[in-house]
Structures are given as structure tokens and as C-alpha cells.
Length: 289
Length: 154
Image (cartoon, rainbow over all chains, first blue to last red; front, side, top):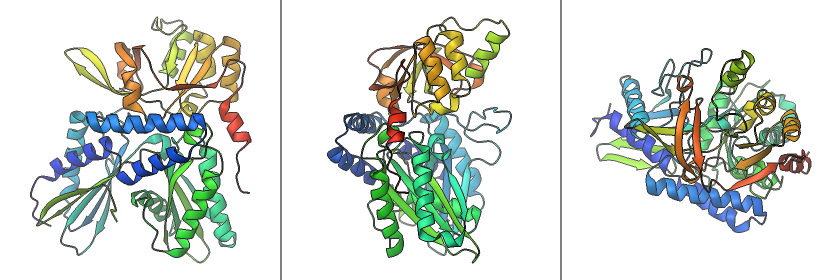
């Protein structure tokens, strides 16, 4: 465990505030670029309202969307098990202080916890490494986009074309529900559970960086062009801006399997990360892992 | 609040007097309470399709005149809208700070026990928007038009 310069609880409050009030720069730039090429007047109005809202949220320090999501955390580097309780305390404080909307409920009784906690919450993924830092990343995930998640256990014979069709179908079937223009996270391979995890992790990859894998880069570019040529547009109201980016992660899978998962991020794909090391705490909304 | 409103009406119980002829905003806002007065922090539309199974009955029962939401609604809802003379106004999903500025005053909260997101909040609105008539009272839907002309690449 790294000796921490300030309590994890405080860092988590800072992370949730940063993620919810300030859109990552790469997404802001993509919105501006889209407004430059969009000729559909309804679509242009939607993009204008989004950009106006992003500016106001940052200026006023308010959450850019009322659905402040489910807090999903990734903890990477060196850490010990006490970090879970500290993250929970941070979530509870952030809910009251920012404020965040209390979103977590019992799935059957629908009783609201009021603190964004409760059984199994927050979601924390652990990635232990030998690095000399502890990195905490938050991805607040709204329900409109999360509800459109799709997993397909394809036949390996379906191949690359099968993957492409599955992703196209998932995004177009979702229509305006996940608040497009979206960022499309795709997982290919692994097992069913790992595949869905990868699709969400792909949303942490900045949309202005090239995929280091040339095959995935080509697939991302092809899907980006095809989805923006679909005509679905912002909020499903028509236009040339259906997605701001497509990001893909892959892992080896069973020889008899071809898992594909789609996890859509709304235009407000919020992310923030804090790297804690002997040099202090460094906050970022860019490349995370 | 849709489920409760319909249950209460079915059982002959009183529903809040703001409901008949109302404009319904599909929104679970972030609200802050100071000295007993509620104010809105952020309030954008939520996915309207979630109310598809309840909205036709809501529109007919309470004479709802307009629905504000995102993503559009089902054909069954469009039929009820046509019967009653109701329109669907598309708000920009996620534009919660801009839209909150158009909710000039919160005049109360009904059924607070349902939780902040699911309770029925009463607002006065001024310059709320931008809003686009995406489903009209003649049964025309912009969502349908976009869906019919989608280029899927299949």
C-alpha cells in the first residue's frame, strides 16, 4: 500500500465531483466537431443544447446530468482491502455534498438506500499491479445507456462481419434511449462475464486516441462511419451524429465461442481518475488504462 | 409515480389536483431542500419508453396534454395521445442544468416516499427548453420517420 497524502474518502469525493461536473476534453472536442458538420437543424439544436449545458454545469459546479449514475470504480496498482470501505464513505459524502441523486435501490422491493450504497454497492473492480502507485478511477454510469447493454454469444463462424452486425444492431435498436450521440464500448472475446466488463472498460479509453491494435482500429473506424451514416442522430431525432466514438477491447476466448458485448455510454460519458503516489495525487480525465 | 397514480385512481382514492390536464415531464430530478423549500439542481428528461406500459392509461384517465421526455414512446401511447389531444415534446437528454433553468419554481412534492427520482414534483416553468414536438396529436412521429429511413448496412 502506498502511503497516502490524503484520505481516500476525500479523493473519492473529488473524483465524483470532477466526473459529474466536467465533461472529459476529448468528448467536448468531438461534440464541437459534430456541431461543425451537422446540417440537420433538429440535430444541431440538440448538440447546441448539450454544449450549452456542459458549459453551465462546469461553470456552476453542478452535475451535467440529473442521472448521476451508479458509481463504478476501478482500483489499480498497489492497494489493500481497506480501500473498499473508504470508497464507500466517499460515495456517501459525495451524494450529500455535490449532491448526487440517490440512485441505488433494492432490485425487488425498490427501497432506496439514500446514500448510493446498499448491498453490493458501489461496484469496485480491482486490478493489482506491481506499480508504485494506487490509481482510483470512477465511471458514473447512467441507466438510460446501461439499460441498452447487449451480450451476444456468437458462433465463431459469424466472424468479423457477425461482430459488426451485432454492434450495429445493438446501437440502432437502442435508438434515442441511451442519449446519443453515444460512445460505443465493445468487448470481443473472453468469457461472457469478462466480455461485458471489457465493453464497459472500453468507455475509459479516450475517443481521440488510436487503438494500438490495427485490426481493432479498422473495426472502430468502420463502425464509426457506418453508425454516423445510419441517420439515427442525436437523441434518435435524425442527423449525422449518432456516435462520437467507438472503442473496442478484446481478449482470447474459447475456440468454440465468439462473445461480443456492447456497453453504450451516453454523450455524457463521465470519467475521472486519481493516481496516488509518493509525488502526491494527480487527477486526470484522459487516458486511464 | 405513474403506478401509484393509476392505482389510486382505480381504487377511487384522491390523486393530487395538479394531475388532470397536466404536462408530465419524465424526469427524476436532483432536488435540494433548504429551510423547508425545495429547489432544483439538475433536471433532464429520462427514457420515456420505461413508461410505455402505463402512459396510455395515464393520458386517458387524467387528460394529460403534453409529455416531455426523451427517446419517444410506443404506438399504443401515440394512439392515446391522438384520442385525448396530447403531444410528446422531446427534450435534450442529459441537458439537466440548462433545462433546470426553465423550471422557475418548485411548488411541492407529492409521494416523497417513492424517493427523489420517482416522486411527483410540481413545477412552474418558464422558457423550458429547447423542446421539439417529436410525436404530435395526429399520430405522426419523428422517431418513426427516422427509424423507417435508417441505413443499417445489412
